[in-house]
Length: 315
Image 1 (cartoon, helix red, strand yellow):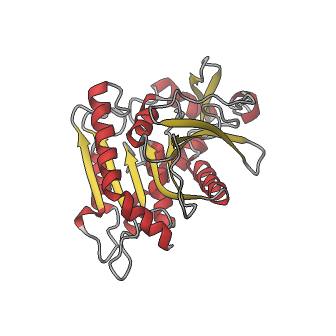
Image 2 (cartoon, one colour):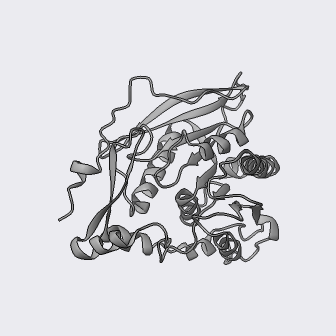
Image 3 (cartoon, helix red, strand yellow):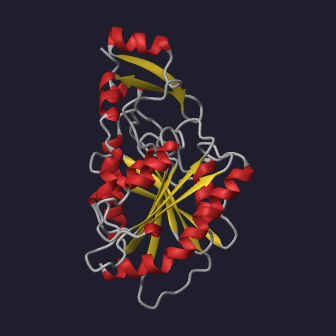
């Protein structure tokens, strides 16, 4: 039997009274936030807001939510670069999923549906606080997550997918070693790696995790409603991918480009834009590729922000 989740996977880190936030970019301020989940876990994050705040006469509080991928967090370079792309004009929230960053709880290889539920819950809480969600940005696994949200809901008009995987039927061949697969066959689980700030957590992979993950079907993105029956914009999608991505091959970007909104009768060519970053890897870690990532995101948001805010005002 694999170890119980509470024995190995449980994140025992308790967020301090004042949660850490990154150093603010010029013209912005960062504010820590936490969300109490129904199961008792605490999700954490931080708002990045314009400073000084522009006083909206109609109390309109637009927000973009940025989500990290597997074994990542809101302080990582790729999330910070996505945040920088929006600064200082566009208010946004960077979120830590369970067991990552400063959030409590657990993370698992096959927790896609769990994180989807977390995302929906956080969005509902933000709306209760008066925010209007204009956009979602997801990197890697979270790219698939925000596209899945867009498939099932028509209430967030701007969706940005960065380095997401289209085909989940096979794990990358380099990810697990032969001895891992042998242990999986013999005992149904294996210890994959250590993670966390001090490498204090052990990531357990179970047979069920692999089954759940391989069952993720991203062909559903063909049902994203890009335009309504009158031809008005409902959703705009941007896909950004590096052509040297060693984790998720760039083919995934073209698969998404082919399928996103395919069933939308009045789809137009620019409803889903694809940007391939030359020499870009999965997380755009060098400054030249990171600069191109920021530029692609910023230019797209600048172009579509006005229509995005108008769409959510009309919902």
